[in-house]
Image (cartoon, rainbow, N blue to C red; front, top):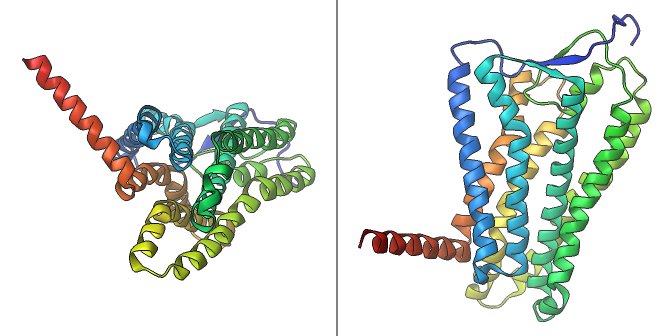
Amino acid sequence: AEGRNQTPISEFILLGFGNGPELQPLLFMLFLVIYLMTVVGNLLIVVLVVTDRHLHIPMYFFVGNLSWLETCYSSTILPRLLDSLLTGGRTVSIKGCIVQLYFFGVLSSTENMLLAAMSFDRYIAICHPLRYASLMTSRVCCWLVAGAWLGSFLLSTIVDSLMFQLTFCGSKEIDHFFCDFSPIIKLSCSDTRTLELVTFVVAAVGSIVPFLLPPISYFFIITTIVRIPSSTGRKKAFSTCSSHLIVLVVLYVTTITVYLVPTANTPKVVHKIFSVFYTVLTPLINPVIYSVRNKEVSESLRRVVLKLSDFENRQRI
């Protein structure tokens, strides 16, 4: 805080995607379409998982929860961005910014834990198929999901309770399209060392540990699949976890690029583009992957479409 203007500020300015007025309407339409498709796609999967008894198995219980999470995740970031693109308003109160960061943290951490739970489910299904029914009971699945949500809320509350004690002064500008941790911390004129240490520990528990579990699970899964004697058996075993694996790869590549690759020499615009992949496009891609790659979801969707067309035909008669 040395040499910085010590006048406290009460709001931030999110710079978003720059000042180009000719770009704003185009970006607004693009993000609006993405948001609507994300919400519709994910809620459709939630409805299918809840209503179709064929999907009442652990894997789709996790998929349904992941889809609900992705709907919330998009709704944490995109409505605020759409409002900014439509009205040109870029200011956000400090409290509003920290609240957005809070829900972003909760949902990011829960997503990591859910994907870890899904990889554990696939590990049991492929490596210990005879014990699958006794190990992955509905009660165990509920505890895993509840643990993911409650753990994330607790960890994010610890960080945000400390963030609300910070004082901000000097520059108001955040060169990003949403309130992320690092850009906010840089604007604080308080001592942030305790907060950064606590955040590192929380991130290790809520993100890094769940981040490492899926690769370990998939090491054992792939080892088991390779040992299956028939090619049909290998193909069938791999198809049950291919969609989850694709989702993991997309998430890992974008997250590592945004948060772990050094940003000093990376242009801000490149950083923002990868952040868009991580926060905006991943929630859109996930329902597409699960509906295209999973035969059960495709079949369930086909049954719904047939029922709707039958209902429409009856109405006309």
